[in-house]
Image (cartoon, rainbow, N blue to C red; front, top):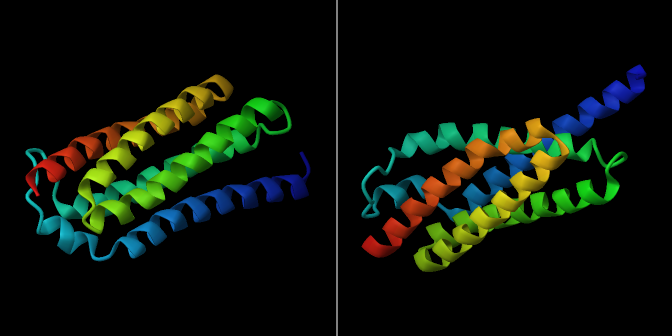
Amino acid sequence: MSKTSHLKTFLYFIAFILIVEGIGALSSLFAGDIKSIYNNLKLPPLAPPDYLFGIVWPLLYALIAISGFLIFRLLGTYKTEARLALTYFVLQLFINFIWSIIFFKGYYWSGVITILLLDLIVFICLIKFLKLDKVSGICLIPYLIWILFATYLSIGVALLN
């Protein structure tokens, strides 16, 4: 691999990180004062403190970006399979983006439906990624676990508020 090709790969990697982290930041921005809203909700048991989200989500977004980048690199080798997997990747990013906005604007049951859809799409994405590149799929496991927990929290909030 040439220096130019290494640089190009590195720039794609950085672009994936910046885009995915940026999507998370924009979603949070559009959702409003999430911390205040969260702290004024009736929360179900096991609800974490508000500061934990600011630690967990950037780490999860980094893992999501890494997983997407690893599949993106395979476009030349597994063109059809990688494209389909990346379609699910983009779809889950979009659903993730809108979930916070819907939920924290007070549409709790719509948020529940949205996060259930997100759970399904992330699961499909994870399976497709595992088939193409094990590491990329493994990177999505913490994300799936976290959004399953977020699904529990969303249902709890919808029931209690």
